[in-house]
Image (cartoon, rainbow, N blue to C red; front, top):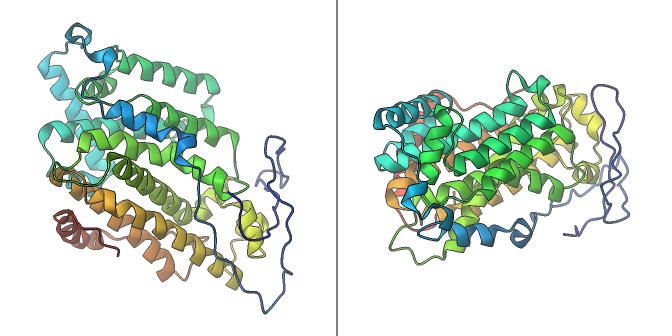
Amino acid sequence: MCSMYSVAVKPCIRVSNGKCPSRKSIIARAEVTVAPQHSTTRIFPLLSKDGIPLADLHVQEIIERQSQNNILAREDPCNKPQFHPMFLEEAYEKCRNICAEYAKTFYLGTLLMTEERQKAIWAIYVWCRRTDELVDGPNAGYLSSAALDRWEERLQEIFDGRPYDILDAALTDTVFKFPLDIKPFRDMIEGMRMDTRKSCYENFQELYLYCYYVAGTVGLMSVPVMGIAPESLVSAQSIYNAALYLGIGNQLTNILRDVGEDALRGRVYLPQDELGQFGLCVNDVLSMKVTHRWREFMKEQITRARFYFNLAEEGASQLDKASRWPVWSSLLLYRMILDAIEDNDYDNLTKRAYVGRSKKLLMLPLAYTRSLSSRKVFL
């Protein structure tokens, strides 16, 4: 993607030493220019919404494999691991408890799903949470590349029917019940590796790839479990794309919500060239000062996140009816986070956008109403 605007690539500045790390692996796409810092007539640009082409992410290959009724490696009943029913019941109960504790709104939405789908979604959620905890959890400071390599080996063992622990066993049972492809899971682990290597992003394409790895993949994992409505006239490709876009929108929203917190950890997930377009740089983020330029910059970032939520809505309305509520709950909740940033006058540097419990509960009936319709509704 080439932006229609001429921009200045600002250096990434780390909190620890104030220096920009080497970026030899990054290739600048264009020579750029920044408008004067003190211009009073500056017309702020619209930001590009184009990310990485889906073909480059091999999404179509994932869709084809996950659309098969059976995955060849698991067609032979002899390959399916035999777990004691009480062991599996305990495994899924542990997954349910974790989901209920850490993703309350999403968990409530899963309660309308069939029991088999509920369990599968809980198992996927727990694996994704454990993967994320490797980088953001209490032991993240001790994480090594070898640990991520071992986690990926464990993933392969899950798909081969040899789970390491009881929580892995729930996912093993799930992947033998639903046509789940391993690639989105591997891609999520790659996102964790990206987090250990990069503390800032030069442009939106880099950030989009990161968002795909850590969140878009969740949508690709979930569609085979949630199911597509039998009456849907929309192609499977479109529904998978929408699921991926929901993950992108969610992660962009997480980034905007956590700008201040991430900066304190030495991470800036905002595209460097786009900061430059608004006469900003990483030092402006680290200074924690909300200026006119910052507000205008945030307005465009929020507009882009909403753009991806709009793309996600059509797919949400084409899933199996019993599976739509948690997806619509996620859509509406994350839109409310963006609203909260606006309500805070775009101060996401010193304030955290928060959606209270009462607002979340009031949102659930609206999400349920949206889930009953197969028509795309922009909010």
